[in-house]
Structure formats: C-alpha cells, structure tokens
Image 1 (cartoon, rainbow, N blue to C red):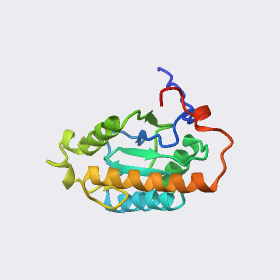
Image 2 (cartoon, rainbow, N blue to C red):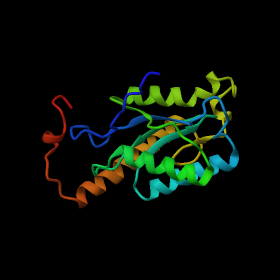
Image 3 (cartoon, rainbow, N blue to C red):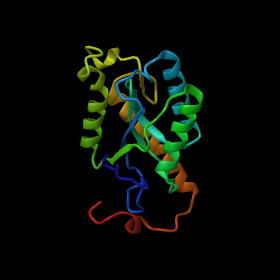
Image 4 (spheres, helix red, strand yellow):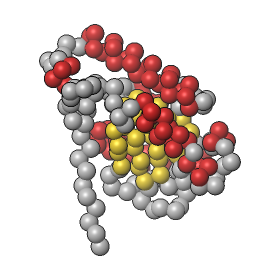
Length: 187
C-alpha cells in the first residue's frame, strides 16, 4: 500500500500576513454522511465562530459536505502553527460529534484575489457539482463570517474585518522584522 506523504503545514516566515489558505479536511470514512446533519453542522459552525472570537483563525467561508469540509481561512499574524490550530479544531469536533477524521489535511496558500474568488466559487458550487442541490444558495451547511449571504459580500466583509484586526494588532505589537525582511521581492 502506498505511503501518504507527510506535510508539515507550517506557514513560512516569508508568507504575507494577509495570506489566505484553501483547506480541505476529510472524514475517515469517505462516501458516508458524517457532517451534514443539523446537530453536527450546528456544533461545527459554533466552534468556527468561537475560534474567530478567540482570534485563532479568520475564515471567509466554511462549507460542509457529507464526508469533508472546505474552507478559505487566514491565520493570525503571530506565527501559529496551522497544523496545531486545525488539529485542535478537528479534535474538538471528534470529541463533541464523534466524527472520525483522516490524518492531516490538504492546504493551499492562495496567491491572488482572483484565486480567492475562484476557490470560493469552487467551494460554494461543490454541492451543486455533486448533485445535492440545484443552486449553492440552497445548501444549508454553509458558514460565512456575517451569516449567510452572497459569497462576494461575505468575502469582502471577511477581508475588511481581517484587515482591520491585523492593522490594530500591528499598531499594538512592535515587530522585530521589517516588511522587506518578511516578504519576498516583488510583493
């Protein structure tokens, strides 16, 4: 049996502080509806909101499919280890909802606003592609920062909120590295 490659999921120091990541987390048993139940979705979305309030992460959209989760998310300026944040979230859901997860997760750092909208469209249309609903707006297992609404409005609201939080933190916390030291050339 092939061995799955281990990914460290650490955010490199040169990644911009406003970086957004596309994450996919899969349930251990694929093809079984583990997540799309009102009680499970309610618990999942409650902990998403709770972790936003605590400043653990800043999701723009979270969508539950029967056997996996997609999200667009940014992490705080402090160099958190993405792996630990996601592991803690998965562990809480496992304990609260008896969801068994595959080890690890898929992550991809988005490199432009165009990519962000492209991934948001991909996420929102996933239930449509799977034949679960005719329109993404009809899918009940969807979370936006400001509640349900248009993805563009939610993404804009999330981006504005994220930038305001980050600017406030930058004003409060002195930095030991200049932006030139953190960002690669051309950014």
